Length: 271
Ligand SMILES: *[C@@H]1O[C@H](CO)[C@@H](O)[C@H](O)[C@H]1NC(C)=O
Image 1 (cartoon, rainbow, N blue to C red):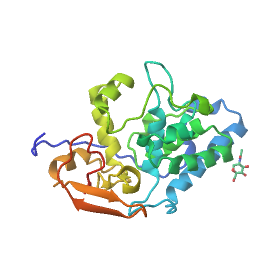
Image 2: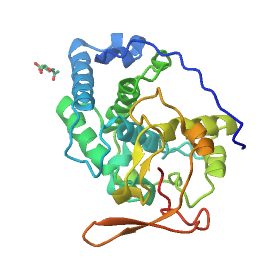
Image 3: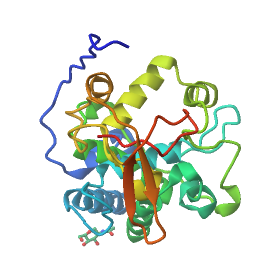
Image 4: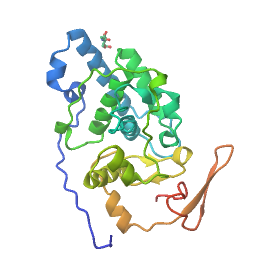
C-alpha cells in the first residue's frame, strides 16, 4: 500500500441513535413472546443501554473510557468460538462465560465484560448467550453504527455448562495466521476479513495491562463515524516501542527496534 492510496468509506449516518431498546429485536420473533418475556427482554435492553450511557469508570486502566467496544469485542469473541467445520461453538451455548475459554490469551480482560453480562443476564432471567448477542447489538447502536437496519436479533439461545467449553476452535490471536484462521475456520472471504479488520480496529483501544499493546487505532474510538484504521496505517508516523510491565503493574515504554512479526506481539505502541 502506498501513501497515495486512500480508502474512502462513505457512511450513511442515520439519526436514530437516540437509544431505546427493543428495536434491535427481530420483530417477528419478539411479537410471538408473551408479555412477561417481552418485559424481560425490554428490561435487559434498558439495563445494557443505561450501562453503555453511564460512563462507568470502575474498570478503567488508562485514559480510555466507554464500554461499547469491549461489549462488541465480547460478542465477537463469543461468536469466534464457532468452528464451521464441526458446526460447534458460537454464541449459542454461552461458553465464553467459563474460565476454560476466558483464560485463553486472546480473551485477555474480556472477563470485565462477561462479569457485567452475567449480572444483567441473571437479573433479567435471560441466558448469558442471548445477553451477549444483545449486548453486542446495543454496543454497535451506542457507537452510531450506520446500518442498524441490518441488525435483527432473535433470542432463545441457551447456556451450556463448563464441560462443553473449549471445542476444536481457538480464538483469533496474533500468533496464528489470522487470514488462514478466518478463511478456513470461519468461512470468511478475504473481502469480509478485510472489512472486519478495519471495522473492528476503528473502535476501542488496546490497554497495556490486557494485551501488551497500548493505544487506540482511531481518533474516535467510541464512534463508528471515525473508521480511519486504514487511513492511519498509511498516513501516520509509526514508532516501535518496547512495553515492560512490572510486578506492581507499572508500565513503561522505551523506544525499541522493530520486533520480528508476528511473534513480536506486544511490542508496539499505537500512537
Ligand atoms: C422490568 O422493570 C420494571 C421497572 O424496573 C419492573 O417493574 C418490572 O418488574 C421488570 N419486569 C420484569 C419481567 O422483570
